[in-house]
Amino acid sequence: MTITDKMLHFSISFLTFSTGFLYAHLLDLSLLYCYVTAFVGTVVLGVVKEITDLKWDWKDFAADSCGIVASAILITILMLI
Image (cartoon, rainbow, N blue to C red; front, side, top):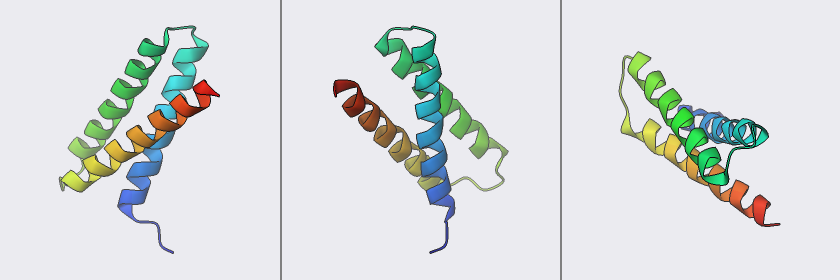
């Protein structure tokens, strides 16, 4: 199986959101601020990556969004356990 650009966008957004949430949680921020910090950091990273690209693709933003949502859902489930 070959790794596509969309898979990279999904996985990097997933990991960036998770890492941002972890560091915000380690700073003892409230859960809302943890989610907001991770979300803003990941979106900014994705937008900057697309700005530096010569070719814009809305599918990259969709893959980034799916990675963010999947990470947020997994973190929420793990926090409830």
